[in-house]
Image (tube, rainbow, N blue to C red; front, side, top):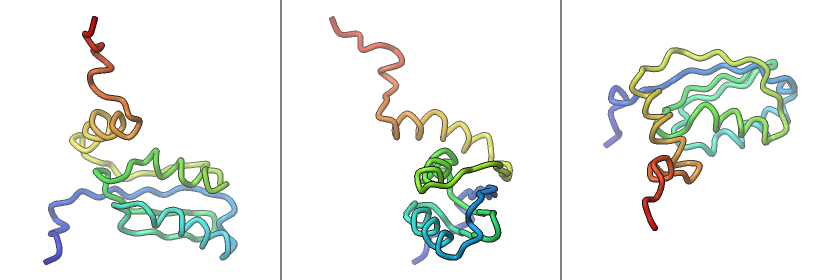
Length: 112
């Protein structure tokens, strides 16, 4: 049984990414981005990259880092509005987890 997508929140992003007008370069970037869990849609055309993603599985920063890591520049980002809940979840839970930081590191270890 497929999960009910109405229970998921998706965010739309559009990037200006020069150099994606060449089909070979589009394929190269598509291969990098399609590895992300939570990426629902991907469109590459004439210097634009459009994605729909689930922020509980991948962050905007991770997508931008992947694009830059593939040798492209990100010049402009337009995003649909995400909810305050997913924004808070991304900032408080996902970002520290993905960088290896824990909430204990913010408060100090308390060890002597």
